[in-house]
Length: 392
Image (cartoon, rainbow, N blue to C red; front, top):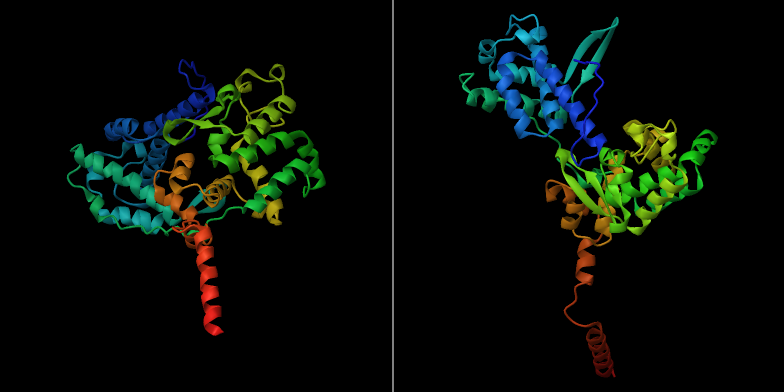
């Protein structure tokens, strides 16, 4: 399914080159998968283009490719020797039970032979639910498009997903955030080898961590930031959310300072950079845009220091997103404000973070008095005087 192709773009939009290149790379991936799938699915490919985000389209196509691979290699449903040659009549013969066997029996744990080795792959319920969704959209479309005789999706077995538990949400406490930022400032807690790299990247790392815990950015939202994303004179910067949404974020004094400090005092100057990364904000020591893997590693490193644990037990960038959410709620911001900042689709997601606010009932009641403090004190004093007189 892989195809080595160098993609170059002629960007005439107002989006930065890296965002346009990312989208076109995903589109090329989709096209490559579509070429290997049966021709009768062409109308479905067109449907996906206009109905879902590019990343979702790619995920659906990968799942459908995997399902077709299963049909050829694990069943007698099709006589095709290659996925491309599966026919619509063979798809029309697929029953709900066939899909349930794929999702419930094959996908949870399957084997692949490669280079004289046997690899075991597993899918948890969340991954299985996504595969079910991908296959369901295909069969529903083929039925609506009058390519198959019945809608078999009603017979698909349910896949139970674990309900998110607020107490299970991993995040840093506010004091741990302070320790983490102190560690990146001073280098305390780093090994000798880490300290060598820290001397060259501490301003970059501090800016990354500050943006994560302030805005709860997703990993790719941070990775794709450019220098041109920031308009310091207007006090804002632009990020690209999931599904291609462009969002302007106000920048506070802390983040403005750490980003400017990195750009002015540590980031390589433009004359030492290739054209494709001159606008990229966060660069590696190799003068390339920082990879997702590198960002994960530096976050795990500094979070492990503030939690006093081993590097492999450090947190991922998404845990800093949870940290931002819980910190904002504990500071008094409403869940609706936090939902807007973090771009949650549903406020119920944000409510999970609100559950971490300790003694919330007591805080609400104690800060919502109908009677002035002075009147309460006067009444208490009068009651004491009355009781004392009665006891005399």
